Length: 342
Ligand code: SF4
Ligand code: MG
Image (cartoon, rainbow, N blue to C red):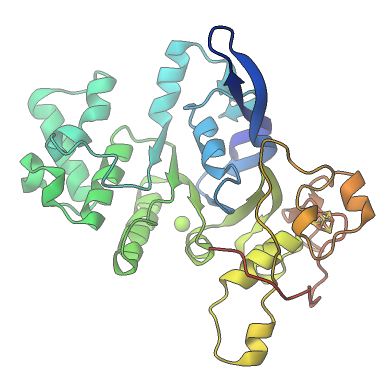
């Protein structure tokens, strides 16, 4: 499909400063450290990785909430990293976010009608009866009762509160919606409802989604393509069936193995690939391949030379991975130690 967003070599570093009067940078967190990817119109791009891998920071860069340290982000061909204040305000109408915490992101003292109407207020669109009408249409669109316009967030269930967040995000008819762990805080029984709602809305409104989550089964269910991040970089990206069916990066293989439903069958359990150690600090990422300290396939070359993202799928030009010694189909990786924490 047509490219909606092109992310080119984006870096986002957060300086760590010390000193009382003269603040001096003593280190930097390489939260996003050279990411290139594209988001195609109408698709859902899943982004997965352990906490601290940079997926949320990358999402905030794409929405313009974080200025990037280096790199380009093109939205419909325009580089948003160089937009003026006015340009950025216009861009923000096209790109919205849905957050993880439907409790924390809604002001408890405000009525939901007014919360959902925020984007109209911010952009000076529709007021009075017209705004109320539009807000009630949005409430209906996301499956809320429009009569509950004057209620407070506490009067809604967790799933309904996430619907309020969805309604607010859709108020300005965005082109791209970045969903950052949108169902992680919800009961499992409610997760499917919200996911199905997002899916229906995507078809109905022609939305493009970036869907960030650590839950691989949710990402598999919603995504067309998936990018796997590790320590600020994309390790692998592919169409969902290729990524889950034939992972090439050892990290992806390990993540999938750790996430597989534990089977009472002992043989099945022995297949779980396991990674030693914690994710290293993003302040001082390991040289070469930054996954090498935990990788069951690491060799000398992995320490000396950083692997670049290259095509790894036999008949899938979209299947890319950054690895010198990619997992071969059917290959068994070492399997001991503790699984990756999900
Ligand atoms: Fe493992 Fe080496 Fe591949 Fe990195 S480049 S994932 S260390 S095999
Ligand atoms: Mg879809």
